[in-house]
Length: 404
Image (cartoon, rainbow, N blue to C red; front, top):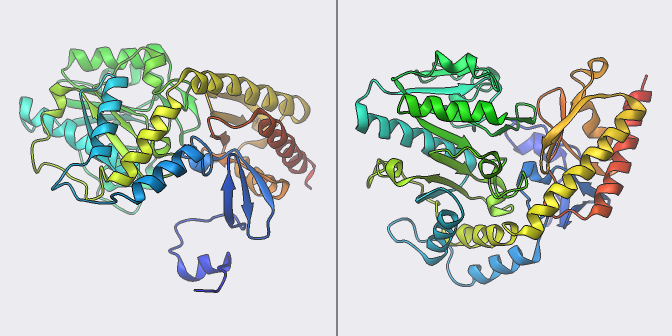
């Protein structure tokens, strides 16, 4: 088709479950994007923590091109070299013994939950099926994961939801002591809640969950879809928190923008997935696996991970400087390059109002609920881009404050 699409085409042709910004980006390089009119933007959104190496990183582009000339898809009737290399690399760099590959974070979490219930069924019978999660958690948009997630708005209208799922309060160990019992098969938790407000998990809380799981022979599942692959300053957040799960899920930055997901597990647990118990048509395809391997090998280096922590400090300094002038934030928090700025009481619920103003000023950001401005940029964003992007963000905040 020779016709150039417009933003109006979204309303005309697309299911209305999204409300995208008015601009349509058409080209990206590093931490910058350009729209149909050639206008430039600095990207602090990172595809919602997906573009771990920015846009069109040469290492990922070259890997994709090379694999595209070799082999795209086989199905799981066969295995393939890129998938085996990726699985081995993930095992060698983490606690895991086995890897299941899929196409998204929602699929990875679905697999983790099914594995936990199947493992518990094999160990103790069907009564051991309870899943404990947390309020404000987000684990995906499949029916199972949206039910385990702790935000009822995402499950509203789709009921009845699956049973055997209960929710405690994040970072409040006392709230789950009575929820975790001998009928519990798993506790699912994000080491840092992303969609729930960029809220880091306290180490004592996470260790307490580990201890309770051990006491009741339940599995601890870490959802690291958003926090994984360098986002917090280590390959996975559990490594810097010192609390090891039985199952871990990964996606988003794992493919650097190419759709891929993974579930990692110990041998003790993974054995419950025998042939035919679960599957994914596209999971472990050669294209996705090759790109993911290149992303892992590039990101899991001292240079990149130490740079994430240094850039975190820069983001925090800039946001606190903006706040010193305008008083719009109550708190700046996060880990690594997943940074949240919670709105102050006077501006409560207004985080989303910053986004269109930021676009007009040439910077892209995110929200995490109505009250938190969220940033999840490239892990290798140049420091000059941070400074320029923050200058543009400050102009957007000034316009918010000055608006009638």
